[in-house]
Image 1 (cartoon, rainbow, N blue to C red):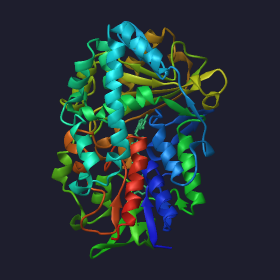
Image 2 (image 1 turned 60 degrees about the vertical axis):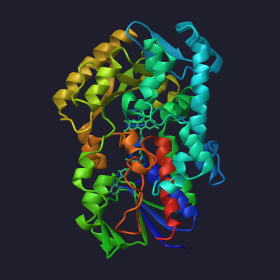
Image 3 (image 1 turned 180 degrees about the vertical axis):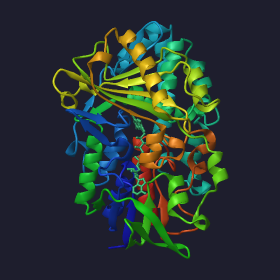
Image 4 (image 1 turned 90 degrees about the vertical axis):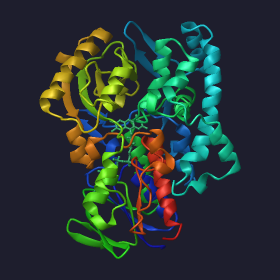
Length: 488
Ligand SMILES: Cc1cc2nc3c(=O)[nH]c(=O)nc-3n(C[C@H](O)[C@H](O)[C@H](O)COP(=O)(O)OP(=O)(O)OC[C@H]3O[C@@H](n4cnc5c(N)ncnc54)[C@H](O)[C@@H]3O)c2cc1C
């Protein structure tokens, strides 16, 4: 064995780091504070309903294939994927659009809405594919420690062509005039936890991911990915300890010697923390060992938090697809209330996932499993009164748009908001998606993957490179484990 590694946290980044480290010959233990694995992608089961608590969009299937492929496995050794068609539905103020999986049908749809739209989409996607290929093969797999990582002829010329400095909204507006098409093209960057006017056009790669590579669904739910990764980790010899919060990283000089778990000091040679970056620094380390100050964190732009409702509903609900975006209010106003003047939204946009439309196993017979998410600025006040008020408003709109009554059929209901993110994940300001992918917080400008004062302490997860989302978190785990090989 090359040494003992403690991985703090059993979400996607922690499990990924554990798999790579174990495969490279380290003796790995994952310490997870919750009774179950998955972190933000945990599962909640109640009265026959099985809810994915966080992620619901399976995009970038190549990243998952590459992850399992690194261990000579395939995705379908662990779970079965289905491509959703339509990929998703968008409700606009007066109508809705179903986004087809088939590329030709998608081009036809754009052409129908805006003259020349099909041709423009073709050009847009040609450029987006280039960005995706360069971004996902080269850029995101860099640990972001030195600028020289990018000193490569192909990469430098590619970066020059990636529209890094153009704001995403301007870029989209250059192509499309119809407001519905603009919103459709702008929405994927919300996944990056940033406003379209603050996000580099480089991220049109997300459009390629969503509209060309498709929206997929693992049978049984997103938690099947977690279960697959955990099974792989165990096969590779990882020891997984759930219900085991790490209370302290004990440092001697510039080396971490052990972690304290339930008052027991457990000797370690290396530590990879996938717990919230700021929490790791502030609560698990002494002041003198931290990479960043309070002032640094105060200046960061956080990705949003969110208000979520998990609903188990008796009977079927009309006019819902698996994924539904309610963009029947103004995207720019809601975005401004997340980033510019943080406040509970005046006229919220929201998202509804109804996996029981695809998968009978997630709800009892003749019932619907419904997940409602409203993005919200991180750090806002969170009370039961506010949650209830927004529940009533969202349900009014939902019932009216789908022309069905839901309220009186609810059998299971749970809400989740800012305070829960803080309690469950020690999330800085109750963020749901980590750090916003603004230009100033991209690549090497993100919090560093290595601790500069404790040489065997490494960070992973959505607050460091490459950023928020399930695929980036899995890549982050690989980058963190790769640091173990660099010699500390
Ligand atoms: C509501 C929501 C919806 C989302 N939707 C999507 C989506 O559709 N598609 C997508 O790609 N991405 C989505 N994301 C983003 C994605 O879920 C996250 O980026 C990803 O899961 C983060 O993984 P992580 O390992 O970095 O962090 P986490 O999942 O937060 O894992 C960190 C783990 O550390 C544990 N921990 C914390 N402190 C300690 C401690 N002291 N000791 C031991 N363990 C500790 C936590 O319990 C947790 O399990 C969504 C996120 C949320 C919240």
